[in-house]
Amino acid sequence: MTTQIEPGAGVELDELRALETNVANARDSFVADLERLVNTDCGSYTKTGVDWVGRWTADFLRGMSASVETRPHDTLGDTVIGTLEGRAGAGPRVLLIGHLDTVFDEGTAAARPFRIADGRAYGPGVTDMKSGLLAGLYAIAALRDVLGELPFERLVYIANPDEEIGSVSSRPHIREFASGSDVCLVLECARANGDIVSARKGIVDLRLTVHGRAAHAGVEPEKGRNAIVEAARLTRDLAALNGRWPEVTVNVGVIAGGTRPNVVPELCTLEVDVRATGRAELEAAEAEIGALTRAAAVPDTSVEIAEMGRHWPMEKLERSGRLVEHAQAVARRLGFDIRDVVTGGASDANTTAGMGVPTIDGLGPIGGNDHSPAEYLEVDSIVPRTTLLAGLLLAIARDPVIAGWRKGS
Image (cartoon, rainbow, N blue to C red; front, top):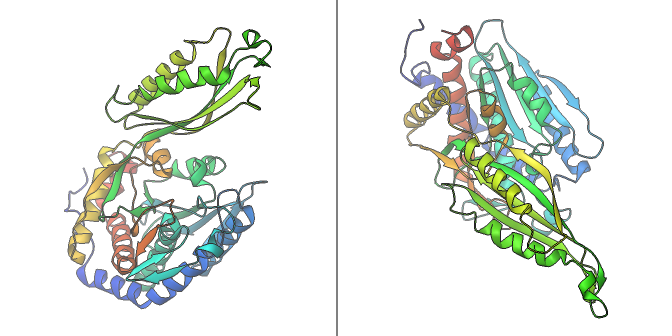
């Protein structure tokens, strides 16, 4: 049996204040680094920019004596993995995950460069997730400065190059290191009200291709089979799935089809976003979508389904609740309260929690309006939230309950 202790009890108040002072002293450097990263175009498909941010992150990790491995990809960015080794048995094995990419096209950084106005920082990726990426690095640095060492057996920091498109290339690397970790902390920004995240909807992106038959629309339309008409039926029926199951959403976000107005279209594609809080509900929705594709209203048409990306739901694990309690306890000692919530967006936390690794997310600074020109970061949240992350890491390291998880006690 392990000894039960109150959450956060392993962190002395003077240690927490020392961490806070360290982070506060580094605030100007944090903001300067944030400006540098935000002003670099690094959309998921802009490999040169993503890799530049990856090299910058790797250099920061090496500056903290981490061993750094870069796992290359031909077309997407390279995955950066930094490992800081401690003493065997000195504490848990912790995985931190941040991502290097944004959703924005090349040229966005020049059009909307980093700026600060009325206490908020703006620019592409300022919260999603350049500030979270930096919070992880600066929290590790603060722990090293204050304690003189990291109180873990091993701490791995993965900088993911393609999270915004479903971690296509990086997911195998994340799964590899998550399988040997006791805890995972994901550095997406806190919600706009300061909440952290303990559960996320799962998501599957589908491309439905409707196959019809081309014909001259004026001379012999009866020989054609209109793929757009069938796609319109399918769009209506897909929209009707909303509300069928609690917390399940189905959205047809993109439709493309046809070549000319005088041609009966033989192809039409639908890009569909399906989300659910539970795996069973997500699987039920997918099964119903499959049934709808087989219920053709236009004769002699067919529908092909291709899966473009998937994150299974991040359901709150019992052990993840222990991490939430530590975060809340540390926050109270810093003078503020936080809650944990379920959110609709998927992240790498879905992957690690789905493997059974205790995971919480939303541990970056506070911001909002992600994926839009109005994306912002609350500048005054940088110090308290980075300190919270450092304090949470220390609380995890000293918790005998967490230490007992690997031993099965």
